[in-house]
Length: 161
Image (cartoon, rainbow, N blue to C red; front, side):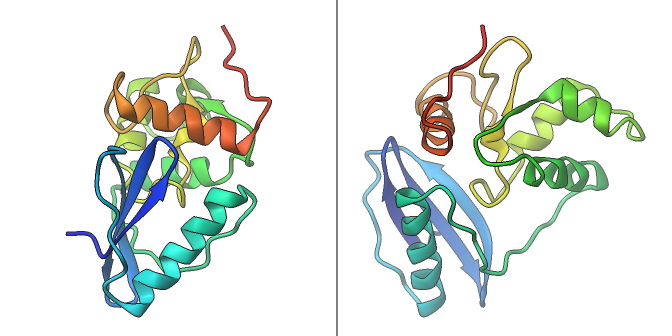
């Protein structure tokens, strides 16, 4: 299923490609075995992910396939506008996208449906009163992944009470 699996703290990152485009990035449990790239394009993507692992200011420039509803695409665009080291709440984004009939739960659903995390930084969206969910989970390793990503991008990150 994945064309490469890259090791990260707290997780592995699986990447699926189609031709010369990334179609999915998925956070996998840390117990998942790494997998070398099965093609040259996957190797290029892996190198960029490894650079991000070392330096959160890394910019990704590999082509991706983005498929989603108009609301999902608007939410994903809003997530991409959040600067590294900053967060926004689900409610903030719902208010920003007032032309859609969406509330904070709808925004959370779109965040969870993101098939290109890291590239589309859904980890930067938090709840008004805490960390919120991640990848449709509210506990387990995915929440540890979200904490690691936020701390990686902003070492002084402290979740507001």
